[in-house]
Length: 70
Image (cartoon, rainbow, N blue to C red; front, side, top):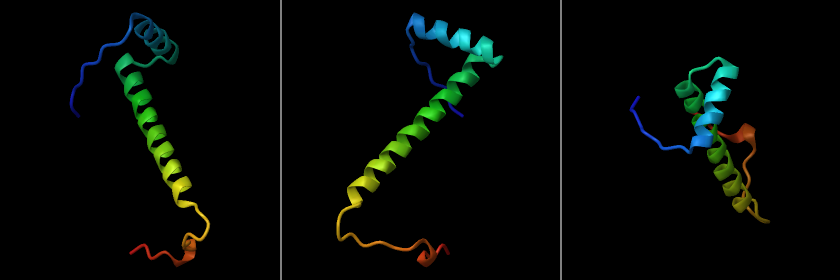
């Protein structure tokens, strides 16, 4: 895993420090988890937007049972 330096506001650092104490988790580990959750959320939102764009009248649909996974 690579390293990255980020600058956060004093308030954000204080909040993260307080949360890390409550969760008994190192700040770095806490931030990594929060960033991963944020990335997954953004991916989900992008997929949702794509599915909305493709859900148009007359669009071809495929039944789940008909998908060939090999």
